[in-house]
Image (cartoon, rainbow, N blue to C red; front, side, top):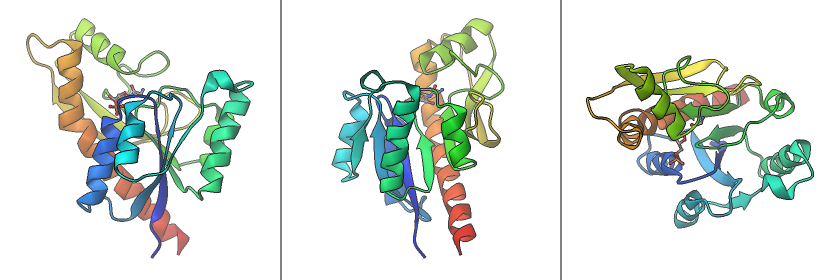
Length: 203
Ligand code: GAR
């Protein structure tokens, strides 16, 4: 049966993209294939990772678009040209409006570096999430994979994994631990789960 065609949207380092590429190699992801990487940043190291893995990539820069509508339309056009069935936001630092998310209802998933509903929503991204967790003084944090809808970090939860906060943690140390112990594990597992569901609905 044809594999679910996946696009991964990125903005930066792309370690989550790498985890997906590795999971595909080791057959943790077997129901889907990463067919495309889309970056909103020309300098994203994630683009190198795509290239090294032989995955097609595209760049769409918001500042070079007329407005948000145009930015989203350009991404939609690329997704449609490539017959993409599942969109994975892996460190994609741009909010997508309802016009985009409603077109792909339960077809967009995101990884967020906290246990939603803590430390999430508008303004909570990347290191800021970990800074906030440390500032608050929580002793456990983690990562969440969820469907994307029009509410930032507000869609249905697919998977979560808890990670301990340790004495002396800095935002950077905590970010690395959350990635290693949670994000890089639950993102590939979630992608396989949803790819399989999409595949079986297609039958
Ligand atoms: C990851 O920690 C991801 O969870 C986070 O940005 C980082 C991207 O790293 N995403 C968000 O904060 C989204 N709200 P990566 O480019 O190395 O995968």
